Amino acid sequence: MCGIIGITGHKDAARLTYLGLYALQHRGEESAGIVSYDRRNMHSHQGMGLVADIFDEAAIRSLRGDISVGHVRYSTTGSSLQRNIQPFLVCHKRGSIAIAHNGNFTNTSVLRERLEENGSIFQTTMDSEIIVHLLAQSKHKDCKQRVIEALAPLEGAYSLVMLLDDILVGARDPHGFRPLCLGKFDGSYVLASETCALDLMQAEYIRDIEPGEIVFITKQGLASIKPFPKRKHAFCIFEYIYFARPDSNIFGKNVYLTRKRLGEQLAKEAPAKNCDLVMPIPDSGSYAAMGFANKSKIPQEIGMIRNHYVGRTFIQPSQFIRDFRVKVKLNSIKDAINGKRLAVVEDSIVRGTTSKARVKTLYEAGAKEVHMRISCPPITCPCFYGIDFPTKKELIAANRSVNEVKKFMGLDSLEYLSLEGMLAAMLLPACEFCTACFNGDYPTKIPRHFSKKMLEKKG
Ligand code: 5GP
Ligand code: MG
Image 1 (cartoon, rainbow, N blue to C red):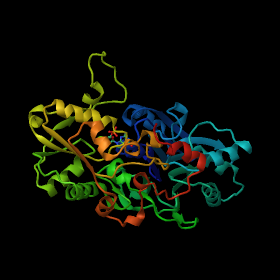
Image 2 (cartoon, helix red, strand yellow):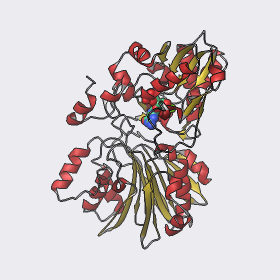
Image 3 (cartoon, helix red, strand yellow):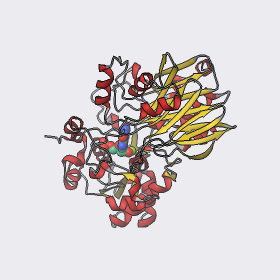
């Protein structure tokens, strides 16, 4: 997963991009970068870590120009390397290209092999770099035609923003897996992964970039084309479940309200009748827990507090302090939990390891019973489109039954929302979504060598 931003025609382009990235930090904490263009030269600043640590006033000032793109990275393909930081910037004979990409292609190896046979030398291990080579190899003089030619062979998921010198390009794959929206600020166009970025920039939301749409934004205005055959929409439902920020509208609908509805639906399907309290696992489980408590009429309590200052790296305490990794992030409120039967609401279980440790701390805090309710179905299939669970081996629900997961976590009961229930809670028709991680119904062809390794079960 990743977050992307683009803005053109604003004297404070880089500063606004920085704000946008700040709002999109949840989409990737590994690295961040901004490239700007002053209509003569491209300027770039990037680094590993959080947006606030990478950029300071001097860095923002050095990013001159009125056009800018930015990226926060959560590595899914390509390892965590300095050279894999985006936006990816290159200069070639037709000018400069800077690209920021969210999503994964499913035909990366075929394309990369073909390009390498034709002489391309790749500088990174990211699939996104393929677009740059395809653009560079195109013989078309017209920029629009070059972009169409470069995007045409791509399969899988992409929402992207690019600078082709002074042209800001935004594009979304024909299935529309990942979000991308268009806004306006001070007469300038803005592209962003989520509307929460527009809010922080004080930009006005105009519309979503449509699946299969490419927009070219210049001083003359915005030109939109849809050059590719129509495909079935496949909006990532996991954006609603976990990934996007609740204050964003994704695919035109609000995330917070959707999560609350998921919780209400969960309470209808899997009530926890004899529980004293509904308790979320913060922060991601909090919204579904609200819906669950409202519907079930069980009082809601906060039984765990999240420490918001946990960075990616911290000094390990000595061996005898066990459970440090769990407790440093979430600490239980013993007096609120002790002796209580808890209905614990969580947005999702992926690998099961964090949840197991958290459940253990609840019992240690004196919980009499812990009944876990999950606001999505069991995740049984890997994602090839950019969510960070690429193999079946690591997915606990792909390798164990619900009852086995319950036992593994030491719970009194465990229930998941049904697929139908999840879809019913959405504010868009079911046919608009990709639900492959829950039912294996992949909207694109998955190359065999790719799928064989990824679909292998544990054991
Ligand atoms: P697990 O028990 O599977 O180890 O962890 C579940 C927790 O991870 C839940 O709190 C859920 O909100 C969170 N989660 C779900 N999807 C992702 C993801 O793609 N990346 C990360 N970092 N956390 C996730
Ligand atoms: Mg969580």
